[in-house]
Length: 135
Image 1: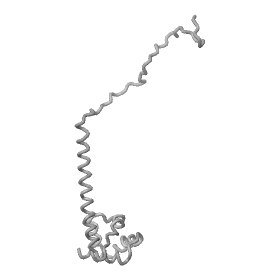
Image 2: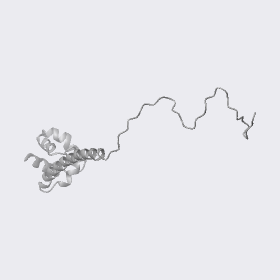
Image 3: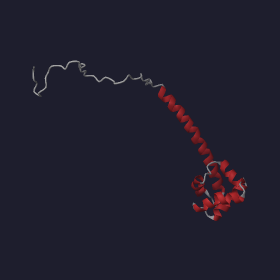
Image 4: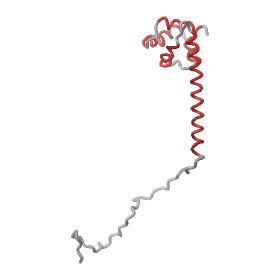
């Protein structure tokens, strides 16, 4: 029997499988499908994504421009209220029209109260509602 420096025998153990230097999976693995890295697939997805994003942002810009137009046409201008109105959910011209059509008690209870809490003055609110009712 030969002894190695570590004190172990260099004789193989009976019935032991031979040791491999490459790792073997313990269970069978399913083949994984790879997506080809073709330059033609990247830009198409980007183009589609960008066009959807562009359409959404164009709608927001158009709606925002309409709201800005109404607010700036008030005397005095109420353009500085745009961020507050957006917080209240008035983000499109349809929202402004709905605000004008609401019953006064509903509008005062649901919207005016919150607007005043956010810093809109009573006079600014009156100017806004007066303007909306003329649209």
